[in-house]
Picture 1 (spheres, rainbow, N blue to C red):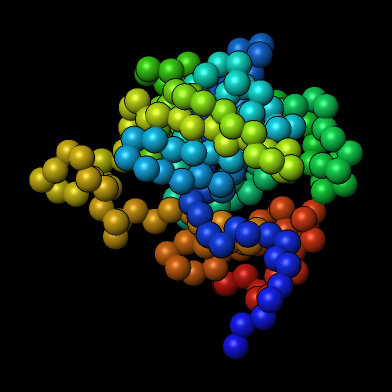
Picture 2 (picture 1 turned 120 degrees about the vertical axis):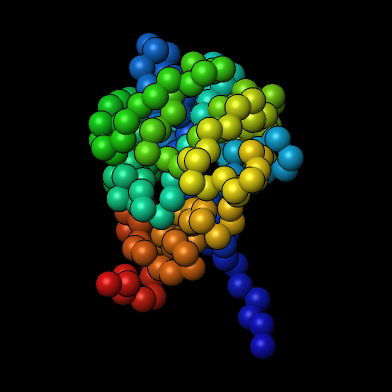
Length: 210
């Protein structure tokens, strides 16, 4: 049986991405998001228009997509309710967001420079994709923008490369952090709820795994 329902959230499950970018003053920014999908060497990123990262991508035209494994869940969650934008909209304040520019420090992650772009990489993330922005398309009625980026250089932890190849990631060894309906999953198992869950009033169903 199926029920017709007006779903409030459509995050059925995508990998978490930490987007590295540069602020207008040259400082580093790091934003967690889970609205990304890839096709060949392109990626589409869905970002809220009020985010500092959206402004950075429009201005700088580049970024780094740092892909954390499930082991980095605490670092990702530490960034969940932080924004580098000093002007926090009222609705975001109600959700618990606060202004913070020192994102790498807040997450306990190590900043590395990009090689082909100026945006920063996160050393602890097993996959780091340097990208250039190709286009930005407003999404109707959502206060969001879809950014199309092209991957120009990929940094992958050596242990994740399929032995005997230089171009393939081991799908068994790679354990991405997945966000489903404001809860974190790794290796198919529920890890913990995100800090976003309370602010977004997500109901949740099960206690976190021990």
